[in-house]
Length: 425
Image (cartoon, rainbow, N blue to C red):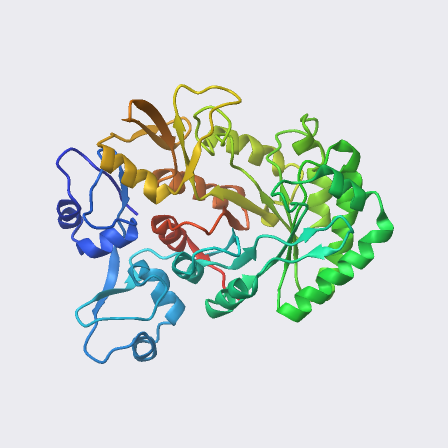
């Protein structure tokens, strides 16, 4: 996939003409909306269709799929302008195939809250291997606390994504509870009743996997957590499904901090069928302006992880968001606003900011001033996606896990489809 960096004077139409692609497709690939403003320095992913089709009167997505023997989900993957929907109009241009399409199998998983926008999920789920509703909690009584997940389960089935039950120690207040995790992990007699409830819920609702995410455990709970995960894997494997464990981004066995010490990479890697490395949040809500997932920091985690965990078990964590910081940054006071990667580029175009690219972090950023306040924005774009997704074959990983599927980012999903054969159930 060529990546075009917008220069002064570029327009959507001039870039489309330069690469000989329909401008509406170029806009759809990059999440551009009318009036199609571009920012200097913005990256545009340019894909190369090898077969196009012009919709005729009476065509439906089903009839095109049947007549051309192309699965509907494949048509939806190749045409993000459809938004995951089957509605067509005469004269519309559809991509039937791209010159480059991946053959290496890879998993694409992602999380979504129950209130996720259905239109956004409909755009993303044609690409997804797994959808993970966030989250089943554990109450103070040790019992399972379910979310309102029926809508997400319906969408997962509609788009051929495997629904995965997410178990965490997130409380009703929206934070991970060390105390609630410890109460469970230090009481093995409570493990089996909870596992029974999980298995029963998976069976009743049609979940086809389990993802466990206990954070801020501390070293005192590390061994019990690995034993608990091994027990859950045995129960889930008996159903024919897999257990995935989410891991904090560690770089050594001796890394200090309550977030890291509770995750024994070797023990949890052995206990689980797969792991998600949460390789993001170096730049975070309350921290200073910084790339969310700077590549050198990500690599340090990966280099350590593969010494403790079989690479084929690993999912690379990917941040489907950026941050906007108001300056000057003041520790304990400044709170960055989370924004979508697509909106970040829109904002740069709207305020006339030039997007720059940090070659070390492999991440785009820009600054702007609004109402007398200077802002600094870090996000992901086609270039940073390309750099991160290249890590999957380099390290021999299973695939990519998004936090999260709540925001559109079409160029990233098209790039994954170009690089890999995304696995569907």
